[in-house]
Length: 93
Image (cartoon, rainbow, N blue to C red):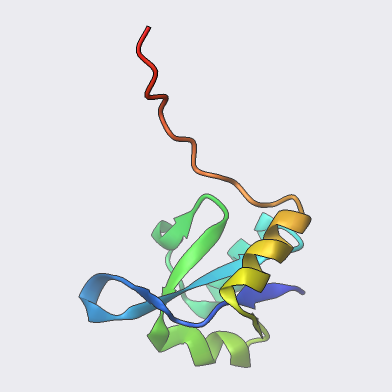
């Protein structure tokens, strides 16, 4: 299992800091880990789960590897699992 979590550095709802939870193996592994952690499916965004700082330590206790945000993106991209946001074209025809 290679589930990764970055530090809770991202400001978000309810005045909490948030982390990103990813897998560098498969999306199925990520969904299974998130379910075991009690993270709701609505927290999934393209290739990661946004999780509040209140679950950070529990994620590590369940086996997530704590990595920097840069390492998380690097490993997700290297695994071919990074799904970039598609931005609407600003071109006018």
